[in-house]
Length: 505
Image (cartoon, rainbow, N blue to C red):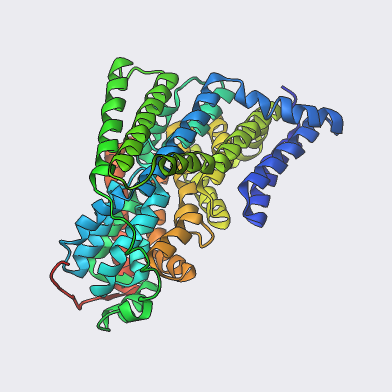
């Protein structure tokens, strides 16, 4: 391997800079790989062009595991799209709303609904918001508060479930980074290994019921909640916003439940047949692909048999979902290419040489988390940040003798922060749209709560540099979050005391 010294860090730094500047992760990754190919070719443009496609793009698709990952992501996209279009999830969530009669109940019900919609962050935003918005309006819960709850149970919940597209994608990033550093581990095991240390991901979900039950707010949310709670109803202000689906044919909850049941049965059966938990990465992807494919076919059968859609409409919805995965797949390939390029140029070796003498190995995870938080907030992209940071974090952790899974978890969870909080994140925008509030109001009212979770996660990651006992660290993370939340509400918060109680619809 050639040593390129300072030049070896230009591609990843360029990717980070362009991600900040353009907010376009695909463009940033593409440009950084192209520039890196030119550097690796010693300035020869012809050789750089050949290597760009041959070594850093085409070769990323030649391995079986990369092709399997791309196909799997496509199938998941089709399943999510047909399930969203079926109306079954919407019907299921509407059932929950019928038994809600207080401000606390509507907040907790929205949170529980978000836990159930673990398969898609966009489905969470576009289903929970419109379903619970009328109930929240009637019970004087601000739409900004509703958007916060919806957003906090969108991407974070998806991150905690390894069989979702989020888990599969991040597992792919980890597996690729491991391979570049001579380690063999399947994507499923690698990602599951990070879950106990994804403190921010866990805390972002857990803080929601704590905020709801405390009946205290701080930051900009205080003003929004006061406006909502001190008037009879916010319906008049927003009555023309998005009440246009009354003539839509109502679906049945079974349209969603049956495909889910089929998916779970097929997945468990395949896992057993492959000897779970002693499965290879290929077996894991075969199981997931089979389960999601059968779930998709079942959902198509259900919507057609229930006359919710025609066969053509159902197939078209699923195919559109597959097409919508294209940007993610392009980003995935480019991320693999950047990781391969950095491995060839010795980026990690150089970074380790110039940074590790000044960074205690016990602090590496916390620093990686802080960097990922900053990048993701500026770019609004979790997967883009993870695609850039994880290939760098793995070799740094290995050379610093830092806890590998903790460092990877820090990179993954830090990347989530931006998707969850940035005003330019697609998930944040969808959450505000679905809840019927302004995206900027949503971002600024949500940020203080997210920072409480992030601060607790950062402190816990420092402790994780000394012990990797998740049974100890997770309770500490929760305790720190409770402490920080108590301090914020005590010094900067106000109690929201009035409670509106009505009978269910």
